[in-house]
Structures are given as C-alpha cells and as structure tokens.
Image (cartoon, rainbow, N blue to C red; front, top):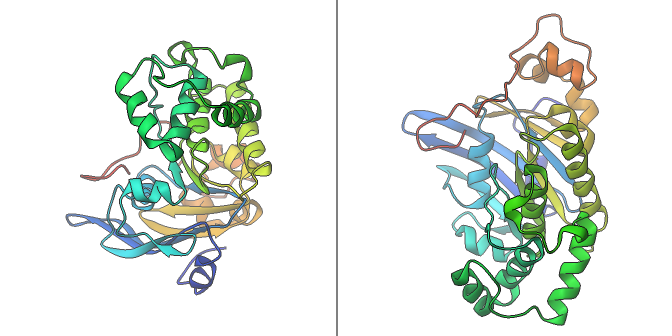
Length: 301
C-alpha cells in the first residue's frame, strides 16, 4: 500500500520493539529523510529497501543513535530513546551489524561470542578482554559456555568454534557478526546489507540462519534489514518499507509491495521486478546497482 500520513504508526508504536515516527534529517540544504515512520513488531523480519541514495542508511543511523534527527522520535519497546546514545540503546535491546564486518582478527568464533556476551553481562571482564585483543583474559564461565554453545549450534557455527575469524570467508564472517549481536540478547537487530557480496550458497546459508534465530527466539527477537537483494527481502520479510528520495512511498506485505505501482516505478525496474517474481511494468523505473549508495554530505545514504 502506498503511504501518506498514517495514524496507525502512532497506535503501533507502543506494540513495537522498535519504531521511528515522523523522522526528518537534513544535511545543510539537503533533506535526506522527510517525515518517515517505520515500526518493527516483535518476532518478525522487516525489510527496508529503496534505490541508492533513498535514505536507508541515514534512517539506520537515526534508529541506532549515530545521527540525531531534525524532528521525529525513536522508540524502543515504547520508550522514547531519541536523545539516548548508541550505548544506552544497546543496553535497552538494540543491536546492529555493518556492511563491512568489524571483527577482532586474533580471536576465534567462540571468543567473539563470549566477548559479546560479556559486553552485556560482565562488563569488567569485557574491558579486560578488549584491551588484550588476542585472547580472553578470563576463561568462560559455565553459563557463558552453555549460552555460546547454544548460539553456535543455532547459527550452524559449532564446527568452526575454534577457528580464528581471520581465515573465514565473507559469508561466515558476516554470520559471526550476527552471532556477536545476538550474544547480547537484543530485542531487535539492525542488519545493514548483510547479503552484499555473497554468492548464492552463502546467501542461502545466512538467510536460513536469520529465519532460525527469529523462529527460535524466546523473547520475540526481530530483525530490521536493509538490503539490495530484492528477492531475498521479499522472501524473508513479513513486512517491508520502501524509501525513495528520503520519503516513505510504500509499506506492506511482500505481496502488496510486489503489486505497488509506485514501488515498481521507483525501484523495481524490469530486471529487479523479474527477479522478484513481478511482471515488468510497461515503463520501467530506475534499477539499483551494486555500487555504494549515493551519499549526501555527512550521511551514509
């Protein structure tokens, strides 16, 4: 369904694990986002898509606390966190991954998950480990071992637990970064182009892991994913938001997004519409490329 001002966003905010309402961001005279509202219900995978330069990364920056909006609010579990730092938002249940995995090359897969768990629950040990960079200064407790083992099994990483991340291919490195985010027991994880640069097998492996962690979550974990792989977003997401030139032009189920003429005109050109299982429009819109998003000064998209 195409989007105008929608009073449902106000009603759904309190029931969402994460919500942004009326967000506007300006960089000088450039409006990167204009009155954008999105919400993420508990226990769901939500997609955020749009052409290059649409404002997706800027919205992620606002929701994670890296950018302050000119107007609008961000809520975690109904609490206004607009003025809170990324660190405080993390303590309230928000986690994030980035386009390029940021891992400690001297640590193993298991050690990454242990360190992440300590960042939430054992901060004194976490800082000691962080300063060492190459090994855990404190051996894992029985509780840490049990919880990390469970997460390794869920992600299909058990056989690689003792492997240093420096030798992992990109797809597995991304999976470790997702695992590190999950080890903090968040209520919602922001995934910034997690499938970028992956081959078909790695993509299938990662998307299957996303589905497993949401289905098996005991606390209603949700994922909000920015991604250029339209077919994967449509297959994974229960709800999708579409941005174009900093405005929210559509939201709905995958079926509604496939059929939305505004989306097809702005984003799903012939190539992407065919890949997503949609008959090409009579006059195709712009087709996004694999290049980095066009950026405005001081923004990520």
